[in-house]
Image (tube, rainbow, N blue to C red; front, side, top):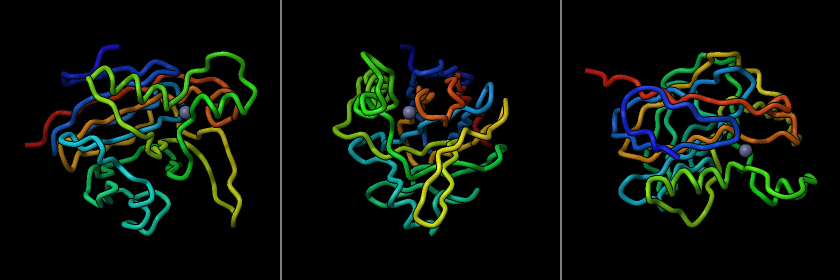
Length: 204
Ligand SMILES: [Zn+2]
């Protein structure tokens, strides 16, 4: 697995994950190449990866289920780590659902190995020589989980080919993107596809 180090595009193959280091101020776009694909995004403080982007702390900071453009994601120590800079998708993203993992697929009836976002996170961090003790709740870009009172629904992602969300690092951090391998629940339309991670030119 090749960690992304240079400016440019890294394709995250369907069912796989990739990690990259971001310096504070750098911007990165996550692109749904074919449309209808969920990406699980994780971020960790570069100087201490036990500090991670926290969905619950972010919801408390923003008073929203998912930040609006211009708002920030914060860590479990309540420090800003990413800013949501832009979003060309229909705007469906999830910050309620845990990363898929081997136990999830076993419960859904999968037999034998099934790729998962939790395992992709572990492998992607390992490509940078890093490891974390827990799987944080991810930022699930393009994932469409509408809330109806106390009920959640699991709908196919509505993102179109080329739709992108762009984040700016608020601190030096490690970003991980997993092209979610879920094919037993309909969030990816039953057909996992690749994503791209574009590191954008620095602002002057
Ligand atoms: Zn997943």
